[in-house]
Length: 98
Image (tube, rainbow, N blue to C red; front, top):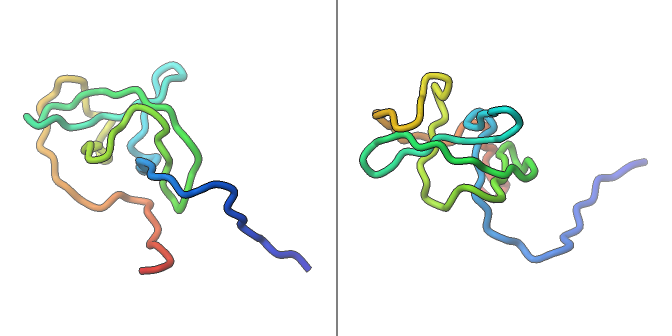
């Protein structure tokens, strides 16, 4: 018989999490595009963490509240004007408590 057990080894911490679909790669560097207040796309280099409940933890590079471009990142260029449409983060699994 086998069992999978999760034992918390530290206190919970707050983390910024996004879908892997929003992450681009440029010669080994990982980046995302964020939308500024004037609807301009800006590139941000990020450091990726582990995958939790279908979303990737971002260790460095993003702040809570940053709007990340998820769909169509192959068409986005830095300093490009965009028309953002807020939505749910794809790949997120519902929390067990909800």
